[in-house]
Length: 338
Image: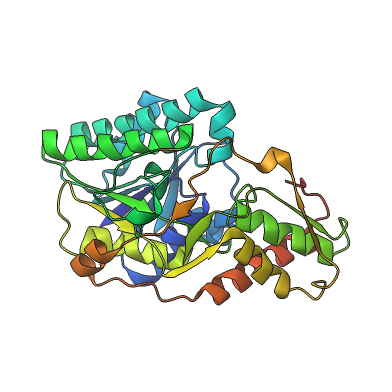
């Protein structure tokens, strides 16, 4: 019997690596991970023995900016399921590199879906947009449901509007089983250090190790976020493609614990044995020109369709994130203080 296979674009990212773990641990599917030849493999280092043995998981090199490589990836893998997660995913960078962000995220999504239309049209496809598409939402529209107007607050958010619409276009125009998600803030182990809660955790770990002074540098602490755990997020993505997937549908997904970035930072600091020494300092370079400052989701539509609910509490997510950075810092003294 031939096993089903799942293609994960962006497998070396936080979400892609956790999704690979989930699929390998909870299904009999094979996993094909798309990444660039130069992609850091830190997040999937624990999977390298399986990759080397060609045991249920393999890597195929592809770049969202190169149509030929995307075409090759799809023809070579012929996946039953596709999780399109790869992106230029850092909003702050998008302000200085907007064209790279648009090219990677909008045109890259078009390249993936066009290759699937040509070579594996019957695949079940998840296109990952972002809650950032909603951008600056007035308080009276909280919690944010799927019908909320798009008001993107960064070039990254604009690119994810494009990603969202491209996904729905392919579902409607070509009768492909494409579904789009707007995932709200999700974090946990392996989160990149350019994101707020992860850079806080990294700085705290470096302070504990005596590598930097007891000062955590921050950006805007007033934004309100609803926090989900990445491990709940990937379970949601699996359920999206396996629980009666409906072509062209789009869903908000997110956690249930809402807090300001300042509250989140204070909780992380409270977990440190250096908590009485740590000071907070605003770093102007960490501030965005404008910010999506109210991000609270209404996830009723997705929960009703799939039965999914977040299970991992905020406190565990934060502890696991901080412990992840403590382990990373214990292994190396050389980190950018970003």
